[in-house]
Length: 69
Image (tube, rainbow, N blue to C red; front, side, top):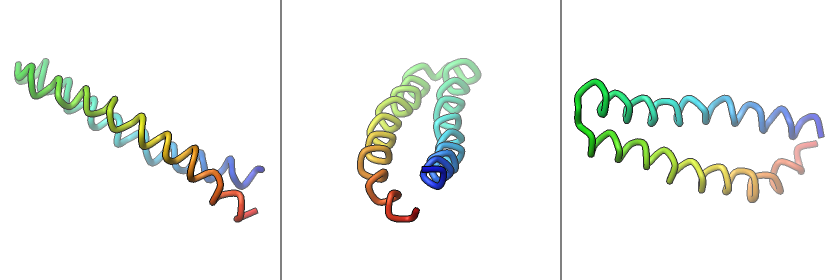
């Protein structure tokens, strides 16, 4: 159980910067460059990509992680 938690935490710490980069890029384009459509694309992309990636990781990845203990 402890090993699974450590693996999940490592994965989270690697995935969060990816989400932050997408949101940061979207906000920069909207606020900094006044490119509303391009900024909105990156913000929506962060939501659309994050959901399935987390779902795939926690639903399908959990069964594989259990074999490492």
